[in-house]
Length: 381
Image (cartoon, rainbow, N blue to C red; front, side, top):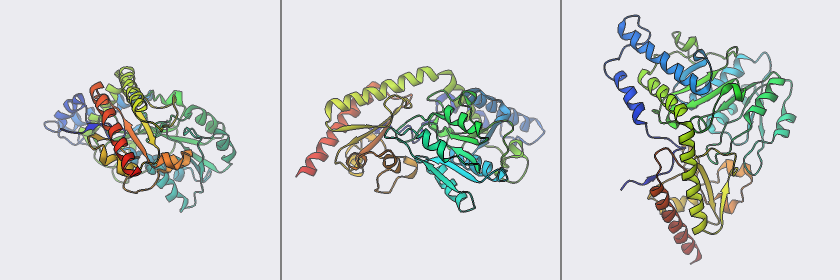
C-alpha cells in the first residue's frame, strides 16, 4: 500500500480537471504562441485565457500577470527586479525572519551587491513584530517582502497592514503566496500589495509553472533577456500546456475555495484532536487561529524528528520545509519563533489536501501515536 499522503505543502497531485485541460496542448495544439498562423493562434489564445483565470483568482487585471517557471522564479523576479529597477530611490530591503530560502537567498545575494538587508523578528506564534518593522524602515528602504502564510507552521501574516505601512512610506511590498493561494482568499486589492508570487504545484497544477502579479505602474528590471514575451519582461517561449494547467487550477481554486478550505481544516483539526488524545507532551507550532486551514506543525518533546519519520513511514509527512531538507538541524523558522529546542527537534509538519479522507486521518493518528510511543520507549532504555 502507498503511504498516506499528508505533505500537501510540499507539493500537490495534479487535479483531474487540470490534466484534462492540459491534454489538447500536449497533442494537437502544439503551436508556438508567437507564430501568426492558426497553430500559433490556438496556443496564444490558450495562454491569454489562462492569464485571465489567474487574474480572476487574485482579482487583478490579466495584464498584471506574468507567467514564470514557478514560485522560486517569481520571488527572484519580484525581489531582484524591484530592487534593481528602483535603486535610484533607495537600496534597503526588509524581510521577515521566517521567509522561505527562495526569498532569503535572493536577498542575501542582493546584500553582496550593495543592498543592505534587515530581518524583522516574529513572536512565538510566527507573526511578524509590527513595531519592529516600523522602526526598521528608513528613507533608503525600497522593498519589503513578507510571506502571506508560512510554509512550515501555516501562520498568516498581517499583509494588509504591512502594505498600508509600506504605501505611506513609498515602499514597494511583495508577498510570497505560494502556500496561501487556493487555501485562503488572495485578493491583491484587499491585501494592497504590489507584487505577489504563486507556484502551480502548490495548487494542483504541474511543477515548473508559476506566476507573478505585478501591480500596474510598478517598474521591474527585466528578468530574462531575449524576445519580447510576457510583456517584454520575461523572454522565452511559453510552456503552453503548463500555463493552461495553472489557469485551470486557479479557476478551480476560486470556484471551490470555501468547500476546500472547510474540508482541509476539518481534516487537520480531526488529526490534531486525535493526536492530543493519544500522545502526551505534544505542542502546536504556529498561530492556533490565524493559520492556513490545512497545516499542522506539531512537536513531540525529547524526540528527534529524523528518527521519528522513518518510524511512521506509512505516512508521507515532513520534518520541516520539504524544499530544503537533509540537514539534521532545528528549523530556522522554529528557532525564530523561540520554540523550545526539546520540542523543535521533534517537530513534524502534516498538511492536508482536497483528497484527504477521514479514514486516512484516523489511520494516521494510530500510526503516529504508535511511532512516538516506540521512540519514547527506545529512548528510555
